[in-house]
Length: 80
Image (cartoon, rainbow, N blue to C red; front, top):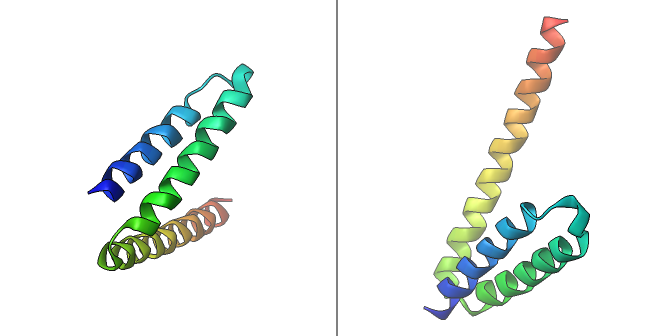
């Protein structure tokens, strides 16, 4: 269960880094960096089945985002 706590903490830190004021860039970078390292650590100590499932979810998400951006480009071109 340690891996779940680490991955949750990484998600919280990444979200926190996103909402830090632009004036405080150092804190945002520190939050993102810490979140990345904790997330990497949580991913490494996770069971192999969780790693495979998370990998498949990430690749599926990338495919959806790619198709969505292509669809947006197509609809933008056809409206002109």
